[in-house]
Amino acid sequence: MAVKWFYTPAGDPAFYQSDEYVWDTQAKTCLYWEANGWWFRMEDSAPAYFLKGPWVYNLMGEQAFYTG
Image (tube, rainbow, N blue to C red; front, side, top):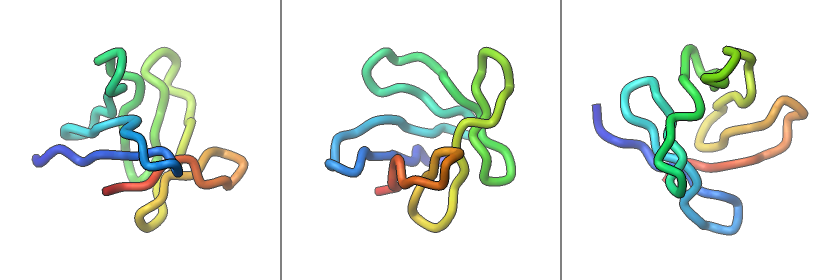
């Protein structure tokens, strides 16, 4: 699978996704895994974000990141 990049609303790189794993661009650590459009935290498998179109939303429905 090709790498997919995610950016903050300000345009800064925040995460990249390889297969189902979402990595922090700064710390180079895997923070989330994605399934069916949902991002789950690696530490406890709790849902953290969801994908809709080019945007990633937090659980409050606010735009958090976008795909580039």
